[in-house]
Image 1 (cartoon, rainbow, N blue to C red):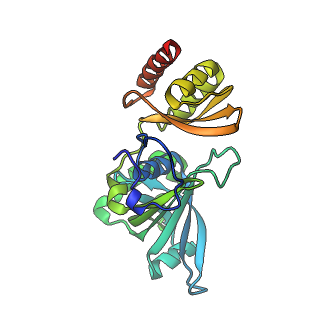
Image 2: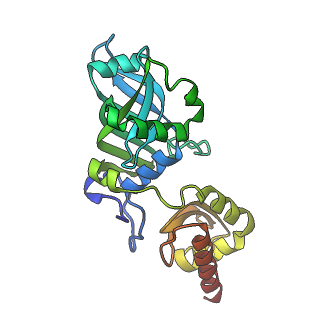
Image 3: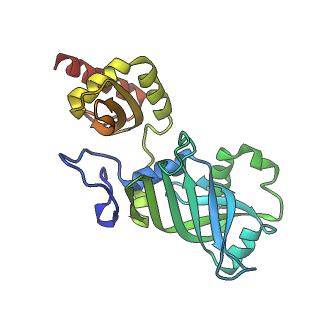
Amino acid sequence: MTTPPSARKHAGPSTAGPVLPEPSFGERARTLLYLERVGSLSTHSLKQPGFPFGSVMPYGLDDRGRPIFLISTMAMHTQNLRADPRASLLVTQADSGGDVLGASRVTLLGDVLPIAAPELAEARKLYLARYENSKYWVDFEDFSFYRMNVVDVYYVGGFGVMGWVNAGDYSSAEPDPLADSAPEIVQHMNADHKDALVHLARAFGGIEAQEVEMTSVDRLGFHVRAKTQEGMRGARIAFLREVRDSGETRKVLVEMVQRARRA
């Protein structure tokens, strides 16, 4: 999928002109879960029935994007889950630049249950790959692996960009292939190719700008923030073709800049 699930989206801003290809909300949610490491787990309180109980929660991920937790029987959230497995996990974008409400975030809803014995070895491997220090307590008798079986997902990509993603679309999506290299690409373009970004915004975004900053990049294109005579303006620019790594990204950007300068 390359476009958000519009049937389940609300509060999105109206747009003029063609709709440019973007990763689906499912892909964006998977990418955010992949990049981050810690979320807020909300369980049903045993002590105060009817109230949610929030806990800071490190997590691993399996190949379907299901969060894996290593939790102690002494923890209040574990006691809550044993009584009622229904829970939610909120994960937010860490590098928001101070714009908390403009940052991406995703809420997973599902049942958090102990992982069955035949699957424990794989869960242990996946979790330790993210949290090497957990090797010091992973084998304590009071610690066990739990997994959230996701039943629904709510994604927010910033102001006016939000919508539900069904569990099937979420589990079948994959993290964006540029997830790990995106920060370096953005930093490089903004530091070393400011003039090129101005040309790209003009030729491919129809924006006459004095300054342009790349704010994000994915396999299908990138977002910019442009300083124009009318003020600041945001826009998305599609790549000429899909990319799979930083090398392909560089090639397509060079080609686009060359076309923009000729134009």
